[in-house]
Image (cartoon, rainbow, N blue to C red; front, side):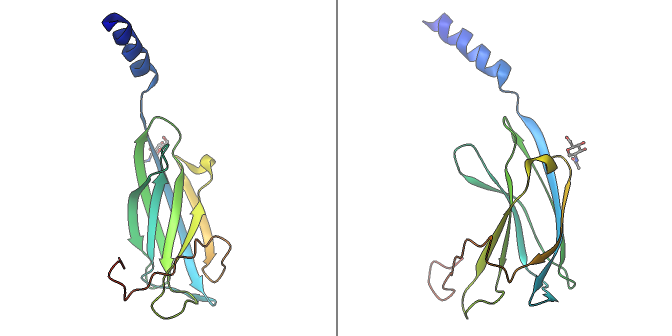
Length: 137
Ligand SMILES: *[C@@H]1O[C@H](CO)[C@@H](O)[C@H](O)[C@H]1NC(C)=O
């Protein structure tokens, strides 16, 4: 029994070499045709059990530009997701999180999103955090 377990463990180990994978995402955020400065941009990764890991976070500069790099050791191909947390066209005390899945072919290179219109609700997970609530981040 112990020997069988040992053999099994050896097989698992042999096939489970994690690979360090990276991605760089860049773009310019706009709201109502104006660039948005100081927007919270997060590069996250959804792992095999559905947990989100933040790889890195940055803020857009005065011209709305950002570039974020992230890397992670994974057994499988990483699934990077860009989250932009902003107040474009929201009600007062609300934040929106727009999410963009980064296509797998850009893992290991640069995904240039160019112009990102935060006005659009297509990729919006539409969280309306009440900033006055004690649970607000
Ligand atoms: C990102 O990954 C690619 C492909 O594995 C590699 O060639 C490149 O050097 C990595 N970049 C950085 C900054 O680690």
